[in-house]
Amino acid sequence: MTRFLHTGDWQLGMTRHFFSEGVQERYTQSRFDAIRSLGRVAEEEACQFMVVCGDVFESNLVDRKTVSRAIEALKGVTVPVYLLPGNHDPLNAASVYRSAIFLDRKPDHVHVIEDAAPFSVAEGVEIVGIPWTSKRLVQDLVASTVGQLEPVLDGIRICVAHGMVDSLSPDRSDPAAISLHAAEDAISRNRIHYLALGDRHSLTEVGASGRIAYAGTPEPTDYNEVKPGFALVTTVTRETVETKAISVCRWKFLERRQVDLNTKEDIDSLRSWIDDLEGKERTVLKLRFVGTLSLSLHAALEELVSDAREVLGAVQTRSKHLAVIPEDTDFDDLGFSGFASRTVQQLREQVGRADPDSIAARDALALLVRLAGRER
Image (cartoon, rainbow, N blue to C red; front, side, top):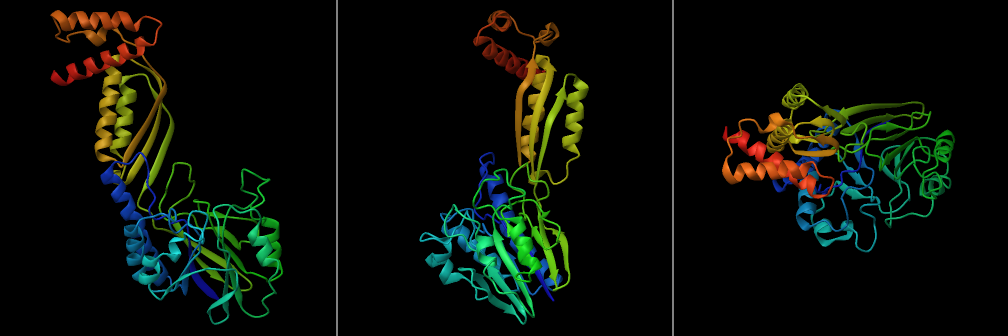
């Protein structure tokens, strides 16, 4: 029997274009903190070792600070750690794993899997890893590697790989896709006893054997990830496999594809929903607005979004299907006179015309209504 921690896709050094500088630093720090959390899980769950199934770094071009912080976090992990180069950080001539700073500072218990030769990690336990040596593959390296292995007569062999299984790939013609059939066949022939995968950011069991899985990324990276933020405590014998999913994430990416906004009550409902969110400073929202609002209500919506951006990690909005139509009540009691009053009237006339300037006029009116509302 062996028990180990299965993780992957740390992508240290990742940046998100919609993060401000301070938020980006918090997000970056959380990814290093995740390494420490994984180390605690490995120790608490009595794991013999940890496998990181590719894309440890966002790229081979990460800066020295990122490498140094990664190594510092890895120093606190008390079990052996085996890093697999993936498509983001392939083991090529420019590999981060061959940089002077990595080689000089790497602790002794951290190992890079550099080839597909099986090696022993504990008594009766082997790992066969399949590192990427370029950013693109032209064949299924898992099938070609495990297909040449001799069956294990006594003991356990773990295969550590990175890539998309063909049954999950959107491109079924991809020659590099990992053949589920070939992997299951290798398992049935005792060539391997568990296939630990990286690349898919969502926790996913693959196939019918219960011996193939993606652990996912320890911190979410996008809205379309179904079940990110986990690591797998995996216990393997020749007869059975048990996996235990442990949540380690602190960030959330939330998307609402259709937020219907037509009334003040709709905006108040959205405000209440945002107010009730937990961990706002580590929450990223994407909101797609639909409906029809007056200028006054649209100004209230913009105020709400502005306030949310001050406390949440990030807020992205889409308003392509949100119509903003001025109403007479929008201009009641603005308190404008003279030139300002004439300007409002000209903008109102411009909004009613069918030309590109009408949108700019509408936005200008919305800003006036919003600023006037603040003054009041």
